[in-house]
Amino acid sequence: MKTKFSFSRGLGRPLSVYTDEGEPVRHATWLELFFDLVFVVAIAELARHLHSNLTPLEVGHFAMQFLLVWWVWLAYSYYADLYDTTDTFSRLAMIVAMFLVIFLSETVPGGLHGGSFTFALAIFLLRLFLTGLYLRARSMDIEAKTFHNYWIASDALTTLVWGLSLLVPPPGRYGLWIASFVISIAGVFVVYLGFNAVLVQVSHFPERLGLMTILVLGETIIAVSVGTDLRTTVAGFNPMGVIIAAFGFSISVSAWWLYFRHFDERLIDRLLRTESDDWLRARERGLVYVFSHYFVHAGIVAAGVGVGAAIEATIHHHAFGLGGLLALCLGTAAFMLGSGVCHRATPSAIDSRVFRARVGMTAVLCALVLVGEMFAPVVLVAVISLVYVAAVVFEERQPGRKTTPTGVKA
Image (cartoon, rainbow, N blue to C red; front, side, top):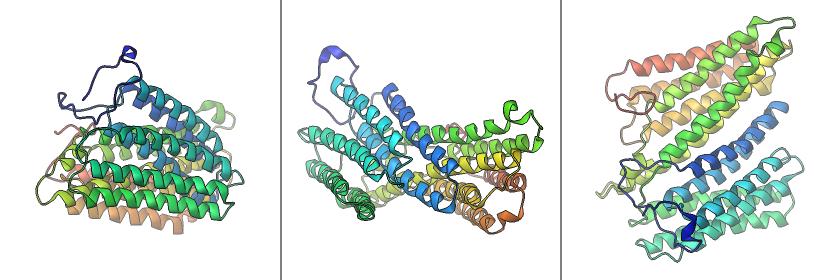
């Protein structure tokens, strides 16, 4: 039940599942927005490290590290979605977690380069802290107790296996990271698809995913700003930098349009409340919807790094490089495919023509990796921009359910 926050209630108010349906739509709290902003520091460190070490191997490292960092953000976001976290204890706990995220961001550059212990320690502390919060929730007198206990057991096992990685040097440490991640994901699928009775909260998870999408789009905007910064272009002005920046901005706007055109803030609420024989299918769709956002978010950040590298290569007259090519083309492809799968999984799904178009455009973007070195950076970014704009125009011309880019039905 939602209650107004007051420190006078002290630290002892019991935790509860968020079930207040008094408002038409549940929204993120100011603390959740603050938490996401702090988490973006870790994502920015990932982008900065990739930008400074733009090789094919580092693109692969980025994909793995982003997955692990994003996984932690997802875990905390789900916790805040499930429970009413407006009590004093929960707020103080989230503030502590935010400080741990700052620690995590400082360990990112060395995570796969000799500093794996501190990176693993930061994630372990965040996961251990979250497990403690779940154990606190275990005492609640709730329905679907068995589901709740299995969920907490899965989370505890995930944390335990990750903690064991601190005792094992690489490459065994990396193997335990993978094992911990697999246990976590398998646990999610087992408990949500294996139990008919689950905790049913009033959810704002789509909004949290959408807010993170906006925040990571900021990485591309930062890259674009390099091309329009006169301090870097006035000496020997190169208009190609500004042109690439314009095309990069077009990619960002098109990504925003494609994503939020199909945004549905009540999606999880409807899926959780499916009581017919289709409940299993509904939850499968929900899980696909959530986890496909990894490709949406990682793709946006990688594409932003690629756009930035293209701008700098043009301004400073050096080679673009295979690493930048992979980040740009595979990043934009990951977003196109991830958003297509995400929107295909929703109950009001995009139709097969739109989905096939996104898959086809994903293939085109991937194919650019093979031929991209033949083109100047400005041409490559222009082609990707045209692909994205074409996707927007194509989808706007399709009949059927439409929403504005803010997610409100037209």
